[in-house]
Amino acid sequence: MKKILLTKEEAALEHEIEAGEWVAVPNMAEETRNYQAHARNALKKLKKINIRMSDWDYNNIKLRAVQEGLPYQTLVSSIIHKYLTGQIKTS
Image 1 (tube, helix red, strand yellow):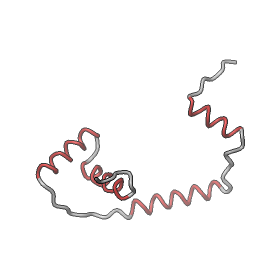
Image 2 (cartoon, one colour; image 1 turned 180 degrees about the vertical axis):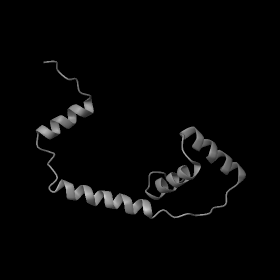
Image 3 (cartoon, rainbow, N blue to C red; image 1 turned 60 degrees about the vertical axis):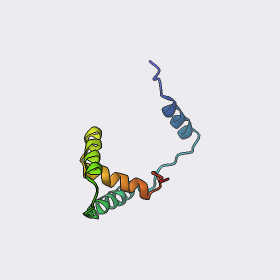
């Protein structure tokens, strides 16, 4: 039988599973339903806002969004979320 080559990440995961560091989730179907409900609720809670910004900022955020391949509103929302969760720091 041909041996499957694993990436470092896959090999580490395999080792952790074999060492018993991972355990099965009891009531997996129930947990799945709970997470699906949380995701649906999060999507329902989107709020619309209006902001004022300079033409330069507006044009550049739209340009960046095109480069990233997403709507500029999504990029602005992502930037705000990252700032609020500490993933982006201000100086």
